[in-house]
Image (cartoon, rainbow, N blue to C red; front, side, top):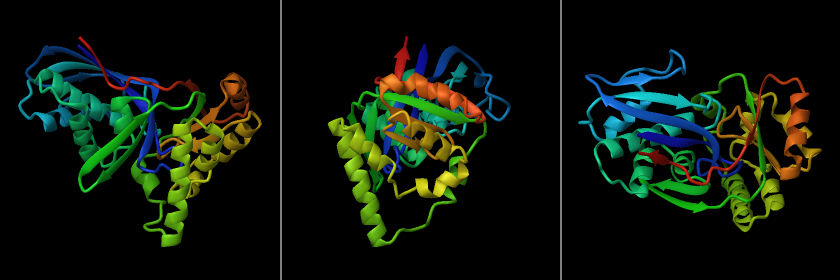
Length: 288
């Protein structure tokens, strides 16, 4: 059996801790024979545990503490601590691992509730589970989400060659906004979401780049950001924004401009990797 979960990009500017998209890089978990103790085979580095301390198994055991240990093969194309939902993909895979091994028949809503309780907010786990574009809330311990198709466009990512942990990136955020600032920030997010649901990428892009919640504070942690945004404008981009807490930078632009922009970006001499992404429309998948 195999479990596949996509990478995700959260926030999309002002949709802070609420909005996210699924993109076509994947975590794949292969479930093999039962063993005396959990064995996780991967090539993700020494910092990723190979036993029951792995987040995959910790999550699965939270769902069902009585799971029989198995040998697990873990392959991930999602870079760690880059703002592409690497931990969220593992949480969704862990929930599904328990769901499959114990035949729990969990609904998507139940999976989303568990994942959000573990992660703390639904912006990454919702698209990892459901695919496409999700708008979610987590209030009074209850998660709600709306799933919608994301407008058709090209998505070019610049993934710097350094990590930026979400916890570190949150430290630069203000502890509070004034009432006036909160109203402005909220109105920008509302228009952004409405424009995306309408398929108006030009209006949505203006709002994405006008975020007041987190990007003005986090941009200084990603020195490549303004270079990428400025260059993208010469290719008629809709928006350039930090993926999640960063440091990955995503640019939305017309499909006809994607390759040219990626080529131009590669000539900037920035230290990182350039990827052309597509929206994943399926989310979590299980192959028997």
